[in-house]
Length: 248
Image (cartoon, rainbow, N blue to C red):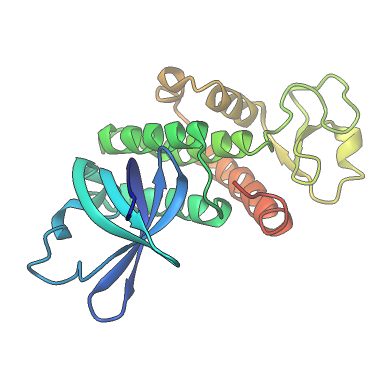
């Protein structure tokens, strides 16, 4: 007897297959990441065509075949429509989805990642376009995502020698996974100089203090530095660990 599975899922990627099929990459509440085939879903008169799209939250039903999961029913719960209407938001949504795609490789339930994905996309969808705080949502996602995976940075003492940090002389080491003092930075080839403001933002991010974060006004220089630290740490983890150790 064919078993039907039903769960809530967030669609973060899609790919065309054959003449009318489409493969959806979905992070689900009950199964983690799954790839589900929508048979003939690209046809104009396809019954399920309008209820499953990238950046949508849906109730999804599928059956498990010998080699693939096939979509049988879908009910749209929420479409994050403002992401499509705003190019800046859309770019951030794509970047968040790429992080998910890069790091989540297997099928396994993970409530913390599920909650973070829904939280981040709701914040991004609901944030007013004129409010520059939506630019912080990507970093809010990526640092909390890294923390869930077990690679949260050391932000309170030197990641190398464990000594108290001098707020006027701070560095970040990707290899050591955190902030270092001046002395230790001299022997760590990957260190970059950062400011106490950047450390404060990352601390607030990991506390999920969005109310405070959304009110922070960052200068262009600080925005660039936060981007550099965040993306380089992400790329470091991706290149050194994702293929070998991060299997969710």
